[in-house]
Length: 363
View 1: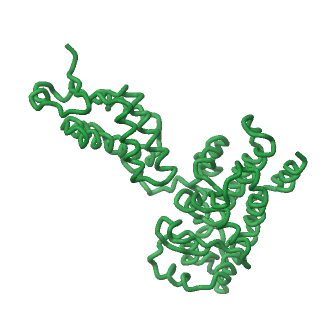
View 2: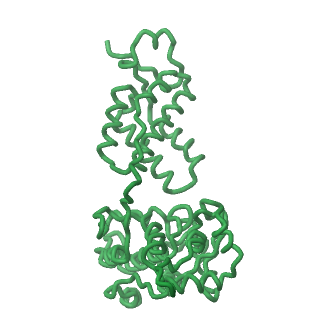
């Protein structure tokens, strides 16, 4: 006789649980319960990225365990995802969402075995921060842009739409690199109307309202001339999308994330794969370590004041330095930003916007 399976829908009899050890007891779950759990989690996660991981991890869990939850199947599932991924953030998602599902099973069935099974999972250990594994410089961003520019045509798109997609991807990379905005919490919420208003201002400044910032910190974001040039092309040819309304987001998170997966570019100095989120770190490192000025006494200091850096990034928003910039005019913020970033050009010479526009207009 095999081990008992406690079907979802009715609590397992206490006598039955006590009759078997935890090593042999199992809980059988079906796809209906899995779907209900995903919908439950969606009520707590509103971002595309969060919902992507909830769905993926639940699908992996059901496939690997075949819907049978036991010490053995959960240990095997844990061994699988720990060997499949190296990223602490990803491992922590698997750990958290798997425990969350077990808790959901417990709450919906009253079966104490579900809660006991959570003890099987080992919490991943955060790696030491003594050495920063992320080191991104201008050449890395140029390599990313170069790779996008040279992507082979997507057979599922027409040549015109494929070319427009390249323009959008490059504009997305440039905007993220020149401003350090959060990829999912902010950039993925910005609409065509947001950018239209930004380009209509003099100087070009993007307003990020509190509902589009992780820290609920409303702030101005200066737009570099290089970013403005590519953004204008994105706005001018937005009709090449699937006729989306004016208030749709310009840079969907999952779209650019998949593009980074396709190009698979490694950082020059570390050999680590460059991800979309690294562009925020690039902006910070440029402000801290690359864009410097020499004072009359010979000291070399960052050209970007830490308060300005954090204000633009919406980082450390409670500090006095950041608060001091909250009272400046948009033109003053733009002027200080351009004094440091004005000569930075992240577009490789061979990447030519006019050639992409020519390809669109000739079809």
